[in-house]
Length: 371
Ligand code: FES
Ligand SMILES: [Fe+2]
Image 1 (cartoon, rainbow, N blue to C red):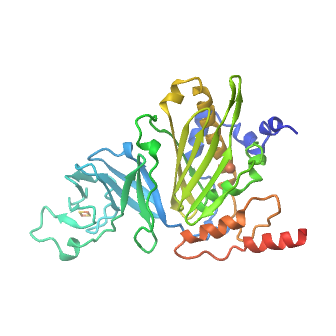
Image 2: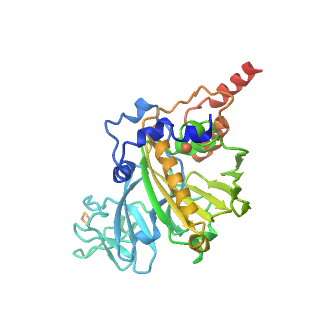
Image 3: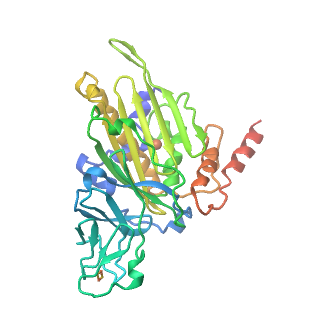
């Protein structure tokens, strides 16, 4: 069977064909209809720690406050007059108002909409406009402050369930800091499943063919190096003007930082911001930037098609992910990618280890039997 034949006929492709372009955009971020409780889907994985995107930089102006929900918590994010983003847990320590809704920025601090108490980025009350004395407990950090970093045109928050300090940094991506590269083209999804399951997709070699209609990834050698996962594949293309050498390489650092670089016919960087909302819900942002030289040149059409295809692949995966059960003991076969190795690598991002998922045992026993 030709790859072309498979490409037009995958089940996920047919499933998605029901949507108009507008319906597809709405489906990407819609609540799930008739969701099952996480426990019934076997989702008992905790949220991993690490740096996670909470906003695009250009979506938070000086003086702006945003309510957010990530890491199973309500949050208030704001940008002070000094240009620095700050974030605290949203509920005011006074009487519990949600400061992300109708809170406002005063100087560099956040003012609660209810009685105008003001908080700094350390979660300390700096002003109670109608009281002579600020209660001593309120002078200390009385709402949880979050450590933020602004990098690669994103605002990143460090999440650790026990409040431990960062053990690594947000990787700097040169393209994102360069004026020779275009503004981000933004795409987003809510995926109704755990972050680990999404990340596992990159090593699930067999699914590329059956859900995406592409050939199984050739020479796709995934390396696990400490907190990094890197892979590179040859993506040279034949064109009417001859062969153009190219590569697709991806990297991840920790659980929340991921990017893919395309070189060759069109230079593109995709930064993926993948942030847990809850143990069974993940917010996904794909941000594409391209060298302006590529965008102006004859490869612009190729670049457009490539972005469309990457987003379509996420749609196809989401069809499965949204309803998938998490199996600690998957029944693997020899054509599957390094799923067991991936799960072992990923366990380092949990403060509490999930139950042993046994994937390694299944693989080893299969290989023994197959010999
Ligand atoms: S509830 Fe926030 S100031 Fe009163
Ligand atoms: Fe996929």
